[in-house]
Image (tube, rainbow, N blue to C red; front, side, top):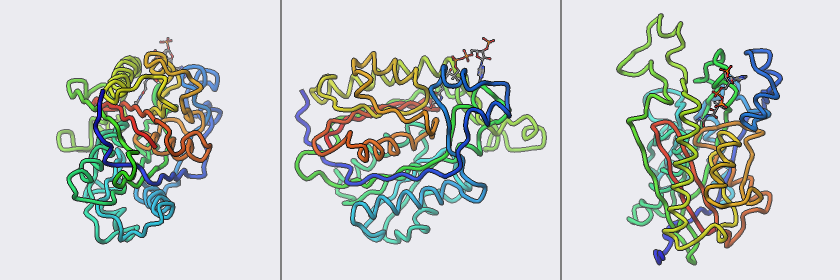
Length: 330
Ligand code: UT7
């Protein structure tokens, strides 16, 4: 039994999804695939694609402003801004500094956190740590991803999976015991090559040949990632429930990373959480990397599936490899 008192809670959530919808039928015209295959093997029906002029900064700005408004805060109330993204607008400076400038949060310090699809849960733990250490009263966490610019649109095994969008949450000190009850995160760099963008960094700078071969785009060993994702998300989820002194029956809703419906169903089965207590929206957005969980939280609140007192379990998995889980009382 874990008697740890929650120190940090999420006081507001928000999301931003670009308007343009790319359906499975659109993909049928681009690569050798079919709507039936995509729906059956992934659960995805459509995804959002940001326009060329809109990058991670602008999507993050929209989500950030909406979260602050919902929390009744102004940008100058933000002490720390953490941005998670695998798709920065530029490689230097950080996306966080650009979002800071865009929203006018001039008083905060801002930094990026790169943990691919697990980024949001890692960032939530950082936010909790900053609050526990009394470095901040208000931490804004923004997850913003323009996956369409790192997707190899000729690779049918990966291009059907991803979409663009952003989510944001405001993290503040707990008031009455609500907030994060337990978290557990891991990584395994030995398996980095299973999901990567090999070229474009320091080791393999871009040249004509690498560009032509699309080596700067996302490459994935799908089935290996699939197996690792189920195993690690399920284990992490079970661990945080146990550490919080809870069992599956105590969980009102699981909001998992949205990569593949079969991954979600297997994780839920292993964690003994029935699917009617699992939040799923990947049919509409596909995999928005680190933004899937904050977008999911925001929609679940709007649908009345999360409210004061709800016990929410979140699990994620991504490149790195990285994975983790967090359980909180809303
Ligand atoms: O956030 C973490 C990031 N990534 C993930 O979580 C992805 C994890 N992996 C997956 O979701 C799945 O492995 C995929 C959806 C990527 C692939 O599904 P799968 O059931 O593991 O398929 P597979 O890779 O084993 O391929 C089965 C067949 C192959 O054909 P053959 O060799 O059996 O003839 C593929 O070529 O399906 C074929 N295939 C496709 N067919 C139509 C692969 N992609 C497609 C496609 N359309 N888009």
